[in-house]
Figure 1: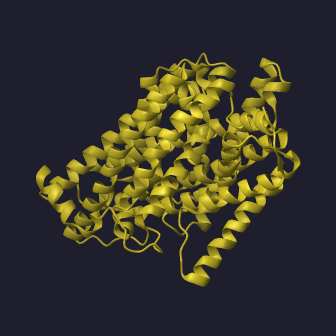
Figure 2: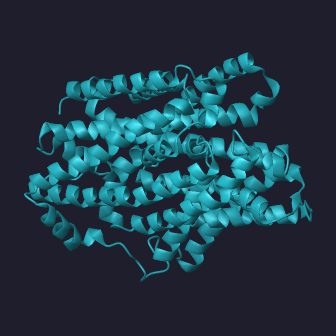
Figure 3: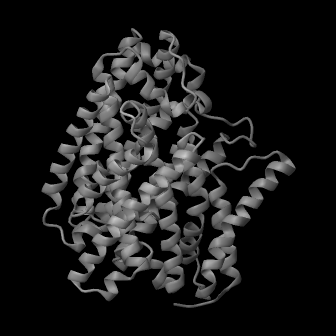
Length: 483
C-alpha cells in the first residue's frame, strides 16, 4: 500500500467524519457539548459504546499481544463484564440522582471542594496520559506508512492529527460524539471481520479451518491457574478487570459522558449491559485475528517487527494480501483513533472547565462558551505535546502501558468514590490531595518490595492496592457523620 493510498484513505474517512460531526453538532449549546442534552436513545448510546470502548490500542496492540500473552486478555474481559454491572446498577443511579455534569461533582457534594478538585486533577492526568498513549500508537504507524516517506518528523504528525481532532469536536462535543462513535463502530467492527476473512483466505482456510487453526495454536490458551505469581494468573486478571472497568469506565468522565447522555437511568443501564455483552465477542475476534496474523507471517516468511504493536500493520500493508486489506486496516485504525481522541478531548475540556475552573458556577452562557472553547484548544495542544513525549519514552506493548498508567492514576479516584459510596464518614477535606499523592507512592513501594522479597509480580491488580491505600488514608482523617 503506497503512502498516497494511505493519505487518500485517511482523508476520505476524515471527510465523512467531519460531515457526521457537523450534521449532529451544528446546533449544540453548552449543555449539548457537556452532556448531549440527555436526549440520546439508549440503543444509539449502546451501539456507539461498542466502538467507544475500543481504541487504536485495542485495534493494534491486542492482536499483537497474543504471542506473549496468548488469550489471557479474556480473563480480564470476564472481569470487565462484572465491572459493567457494577457501573450500571451502583454508579448510574447515583449520578442521575445528583444530575451531575461532571462525575467529580459527586466528590464535592460528599466531601468538599478539595476532594472534588483532587478527583478532577487525577482524572485529568489519567486521561491525558491514557489518551496520548492511544493516539501515539496510531501516530507511530502513520509515521512508518506516510510521514517517514516524505521526510516529516513526528511532531508534524502529532500536530496534524490533533488539529483534525480539535476541529471536528470543537462545536458538538458529546452531542456529536454519539454519532461519530456510531460511525467508528461500523468501521472498526467491519474492518476487523473483513480482515479476518481476507487473511484466512490468504492462508487457504475455510471458516471451520480458522476455528481449528486457532484452537490448535498454543497462543489460544485462555485460562492460567498454575502460577499465582504470574501476571497472567486468572484470579489476578479477573479481579483487575473488575476494578479497572469500574475505574476506567464508571469513574471516567470520557466514557460515562455517553452513558449519562441517555434520558433516564433505566435507558443508561440497558445500554451498558448490551455494551458488556458485545465487548466479549469483539475482543475475542481481535485475539483470533492476532493468531491469524502470526500464522500468516510464518506461512509467508515475513520477518516479525521488534514491537508486537506493529504486526497487524506489517501483514495488512506489506504482507502480499489484496490492497483492500491495507485499506481496511487504515480505516479501522483511523476511525478508532479519531473517535477515542475526540471523546478524550471533550471529556478533558468538560472536567477542566466544570471541575477545576468551576466555569458552570461562575460564568453566564456566553462567557462559558468562550471559556470552553479556549480550554478545548489548550487541551488539544497539551495532548500533542504528551504524544511527542511518548514517542521518545514508550518501550512496552502499549496495551500494557495504558493499564500500568491507569493502575497508578485511577487508584485514588476509585478509593475516593468507594469510601463515599460505602461509608457514612466525612473527612477533613484539606487532607485529600496529600492522601491521593501518597497512595500511588506507597503502591509503587509495595510492588517493588513484593518483587524483590518474594519474586511476586503485582500486575494490573496494583489498582486495588492503590485504592486501598487511599481509603485507609481517608479513614485516618475521617469522623462519623450521619446523613
